[in-house]
Image 1: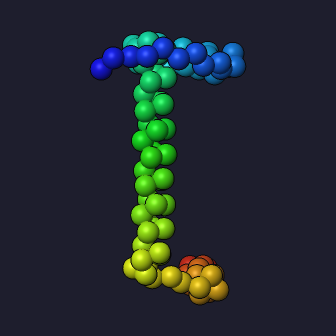
Image 2 (image 1 turned 120 degrees about the vertical axis):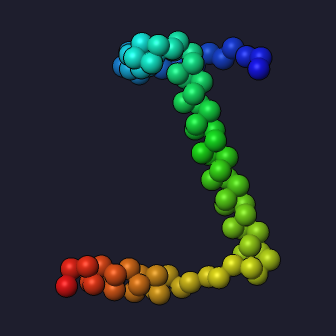
Length: 84
């Protein structure tokens, strides 16, 4: 996989933390940052796709919607059951 160069500014504390992690894992700071950014992008893409899927479900009438009051009542009951 080809790599592009990006300039990113980080504060001194974060740089020190990244350097410590790189040393602990026997990796370069760049590889630690790449791993972190990859995980972040994966998670964000998952969320965006999930939200889009749920929006489509609602628009197409495939979603089961629950009133806010019903959700609160369910949680209140579950909480009460655990503390009885």
